[in-house]
Length: 382
Ligand SMILES: Nc1ncnc2c1ncn2[C@@H]1O[C@H](COP(=O)(O)OP(=O)(O)OP(=O)(O)O)[C@@H](O)[C@H]1O
Ligand SMILES: [Mg+2]
Image (cartoon, rainbow, N blue to C red; front, side, top):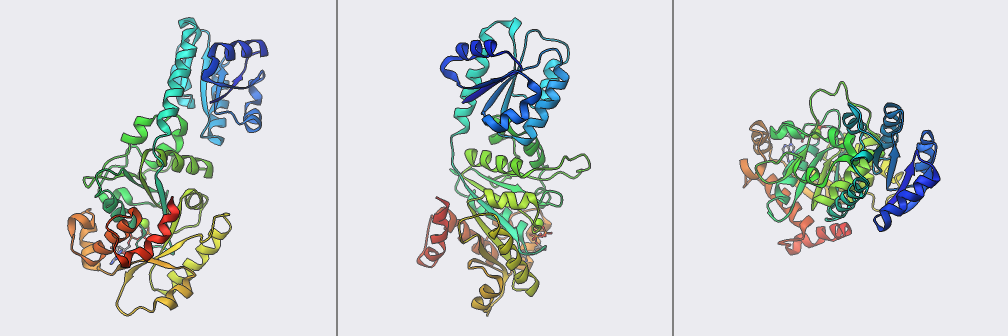
């Protein structure tokens, strides 16, 4: 990991690099801590060791701001002596660790060994990330997201998480009657201070075996979320889960587009209504601006009824449909009313079978010849 030392003289910086030896790769010393933001932008360190000095309050405020812009960055605080409230102050600012020199020189090495260990652990999995974007509101994006999560989790060896990126209106947690604690906003806001254990075990688990990151009710105090935070969230989740399914809602916002661009694949959920088909076309155009490898998305036709003119639907939406979920209003609605997934509430319903088929084509298991055509596009996941 590349380390920058900030707030100390070049001489002290050299001493620190010498003490830490092979644990870090030297990334320069910045004497004036007030220039931290610009220095991070230029030197792109993985970790900053920040001397909190005489003004720990001001230094921590700056650290918080820098971390908001660079959520992948980790900042370790350095002080000579512990003063009252210092630990709380640095934790609140988002510092990953605090080295107190009066406790002994070995504290410095110990902190960087912990960091090194945590970074190794975080590099474990390399999951597949699927973004679901509604062609318009109400097409069934959330229904597909939670049921797909449940079907993918039927394989007990796979870790699956459904993430509600429909930030201010999302209802994944409500649909499953799970308390969204910790919520997706909590993870977005805490970024690099979240340890591997929290990424894995923090998000609540549904009884059918998948986890969720939901949206809480009171968003009055929520800070605005940046695209960088979303990308960091997605990249962190893929290290801990085999499948990450994101409900991006139907609005084109900085957050939903960041989710789409960080995903390995995108599915636009449509129905055969004209407004949905036109909405799909607009979303395809928006995705074209994200510099993604073509095709920018595939289509999922929900609430499908018999006798649909598929070529006309593909033409109107500008999407190739790789999945068709049949209309099963009674079953879907019944499951929803009981806050259940179809796998529990209506395992034999048409919609459940179609979503299970989609899950199989994603995971590549039990592939029939009919499903093989669909699977071809998911090989792009790898
Ligand atoms: N395959 C299906 N068959 C019948 N009804 C369905 C199907 N899929 C979803 N629905 C119904 O469509 C309605 C909207 O579903 P859902 O809330 O999942 O949509 P959404 O796109 O997430 O909506 P929003 O834009 O509000 O987030 C629900 O009443 C749900 O029961
Ligand atoms: Mg929804």
